[in-house]
Length: 174
Image (spheres, one colour):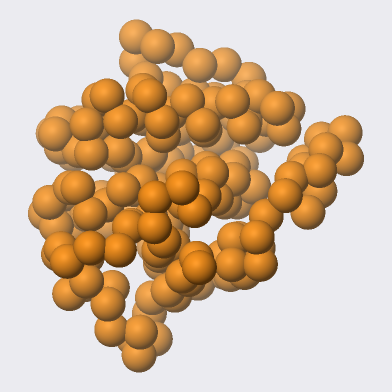
């Protein structure tokens, strides 16, 4: 799959490509550790970010946010030529199309209140509380939520586990 700028080649597995190409409102990418959930979540967010809108990227803890989710997102945004600015003090990135991205730790749910969002990506959702997921979704005016989870028994199985639900797309990585 081609990148956004310079014909850069981005390698996606068939499952990841299917996930990115999907236009459903809520998408869940499921797989074991090391199967590219964070990468495809960041890539999907970047290539589908709406110009001039606002979105949020959520990780379970600050350590996970800084060490993985945010790092992968920013490195990919920069390599695709999409990152205009990142401000560490506000944990905010601005993409080339004017889309604003707020990076939030799930432990700081009060920072989500008052936001009006067109897009959300929750990485490693199995480590957050269902209340945080519901709060993020309540702030979306476009119902564009992307979630990544690993195989485990947790609240996400009850919410996303019924593959017959027509309002959620479930993509599994092998």
